[in-house]
Length: 538
Ligand code: GLN
Image (tube, rainbow, N blue to C red; front, side):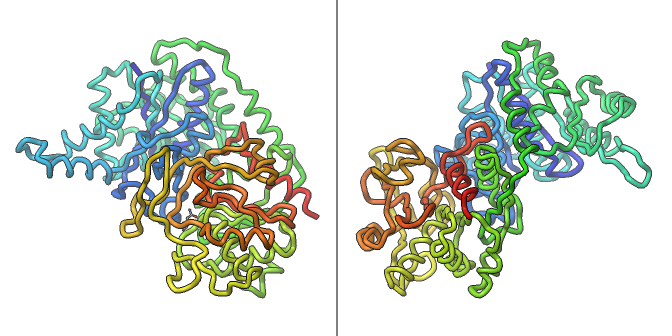
C-alpha cells in the first residue's frame, strides 16, 4: 500500500509548496522509491481551464488532456512522472460529482452534507488510480485557516484515521520572517499557523520553514518546542538563487531522510544530486546573455507563461547562455513602436492566447521577425497569428482571419468541431467552454527534409494540445508556393501542426504546446534549437 504525504501551507500563500513537494518527490525517487504527486485546489471552478491566467497563472495540460494547476508542471519537471487527470481536483469538481450523484438518487434519501459526503469524495480522490506507488505526495492548495480549504483539511485528518496514522505524514510549510528593524527572526507566525492546524485536528510531523536567512538553533528549538515537532523535523528552506537548487537544499536539510525515518524505511540508493548541481553551476556561472521577447496579453503576471519561461531557461542551460526575458504586452505594442521596442532582441516568442484583444500587436511583431530574419517561435495562437500575417502580407489575402474573432473574413483559421484520436472521432464545441477544446497529447508526422524533422531527429512526435481552432488545410498549396511550409501534419493529413519558413534562418510555428514537455534535466529540442538560433542571431 502507498504511504501518503500531505503538504499544507500556512501564514501566507506562494511559499513554494509545489516546489517543496516536487523536490521531495525527486529525492525519494532518487533513493529508489516510486512516487506520485497530486494537488487538491480549493476553488469552485471545475478545473482552471476557463480561468484567465491573470487569476491563476498558466493552465498546465497533461498528456491525457486534463487542464490543471501549474504546480503539476513543477511536479513533472522535477520528478519526470507524467501527471494525469486523476492527479488534480478542485472543490468545484468535488461538489459537481456529489451533486450529480444526489440527482441520480444515489444517496438513498440521506441528507447530503459536507461531512461525510464531500469529505468522502475527497478521500476517494486521494486514493484513486494508485497501486504501485510507494508514496503519494498530496498538496493542499491555499493556506490553513481559509474557509475554502477546511473540507480538505478535515478530509486528510479523517484519511489518516482511516488508514492508520503510521501510513500518513503531515508536512506544514510556513514562513519564518526576518524583521530588519529589530534584526530578528520571528517564529510566532509559524506557531500560530500550527495552532490553527491543530485546532482542526492535525498535528504536523514535519515543519518546513521558508526563510530569507538561516534559522539559528535556538529558534529551531523554539519552533520544535511550541509546535510539538522533533527538532530534526524542523526543516529550513532558505531562498535559493535558482529553483533548481531546491532539491540540493532540501537534501542538505535531510528532508527525505526524515520522511523515510518516519515511515521506518531505509534508503535503497545513494541520492544523486549531480544533475541539479551541474545545471545550478551552469546557471550561476553563465555570463553571456540574450534578450528573448515574449509577446502576449498576460505578461504582467509572471506565472501566466510559467512552462514557457521554464522551457526557455532549459534551452539556455543547454546552450550555456542566460535568457533575459523581455515581457511585452501585445495590446500596447503599436506598429510605429515595434522597431524601438524590439531593439536588442535576439528571438521572438508568441505564446498561446485567446480572443481578439492584442492580436494586432502580435501580427505586427511577427511581420517584423519574418522580414528582419529574427528567430521566431509561435506557439498555438502564436502559430495561428503567423498564418494570418503571412496570408495578409505575402499572399495578399487582406481579409484573412480567424473565425475566433471575425466570422465574416476569410477563414485561414477556423473552428474544428471534430478530430481523430487513436481511431476515435472526438467532438469539440464552442457552445460550452469548459473542457471542450482539443486537449492533451496528439501525434504529428514531420515532413522529410524539414527543419522541424532535423530538430526532433524523428518522423513522428507526440505533443500536448489546448485549442479550439485549427489552420485551414485548404490553403496549404498557396502558402507553400510562397515559402511557408506545412512541415508537420496530423496522421490523417487533415490538421496542420507545424509551419516553417523556407527563406528564414529560424521561423517555426507549432499548433501544440512543446513547453509542457521540457525538463531542466532534458530540455525540449525545439526550445534548445530556438535558443541556439537566437544566440547566433547577429
Ligand atoms: N485561441 C486559440 C484556439 O482556441 C489558440 C489557443 C491557444 O493558444 N492555446 O485555437
